[in-house]
Length: 181
Image 1 (cartoon, rainbow, N blue to C red):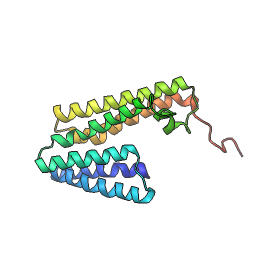
Image 2: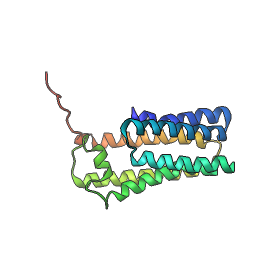
Image 3: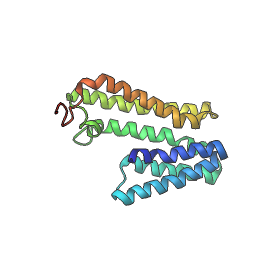
Image 4: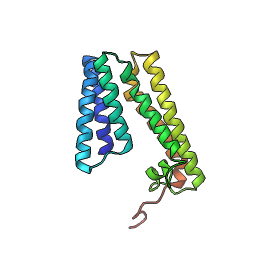
């Protein structure tokens, strides 16, 4: 449910952009992000680092977009979030006891540490690539950047995850109760 709630502001942004333009969409993005993350914080008394960085970047870049009446600032949000994620994956090689991808997926896969390292680096590379794609589309194809931000990024992520699941399927951890009659 939490993952779905993270996409609500983005979907509202897209719908409002199509109906009313970038500035109304940015205002909706700001309001919906604050409301959703306030609700998540109220419910669990915490926000994860990705949510916190998304909230801060949305407030700062969305606020600048509205205050200075320039869409340049909001166009930087998706690339910056992706690059922060890339740095977080990369940084987990040097900070902490486990790689970020291992903390996220350790309950799903059982595999050698070398493979965890490769998987973590592939996520860092993918997030850096996704940030670059978002930036390129935003400034070279401005008429398509909102659609790419919402649907293109999601499609690339689904393809990336699907390819990883296919490759890593031999390492899937058996679930409890499997094979019982």
